[in-house]
Length: 137
Image (tube, one colour):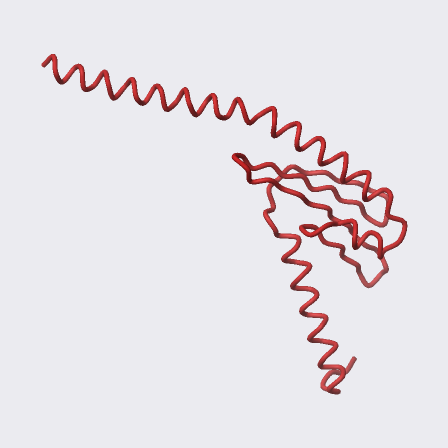
């Protein structure tokens, strides 16, 4: 009986250490996450605000963002950055043609660059088809 109690006590001790380690890990990454997110958001706001043309906005969104234009000439510029070093932190800053700004810390993990690449591929295919005379456009 004493041996079994020692084993149970040892298991409880190990679990308590793991819980403490997890809590300390979260506690240590929390300030870094907040600092990174605020710094990145400020940088993104500055970069998007400095862009004066649609070409500049398309460049300002960075490698993980996207710039979308619509038939009515309106547009949306999404600058997105994230980090996966020991923690996941994300920052999306959006500016639209109406002067409205949006911000999110939701983790989109490459979604916007995927949209940009898909649209680019679709436009390239449509252009190739037009050159072949196979579309009505």
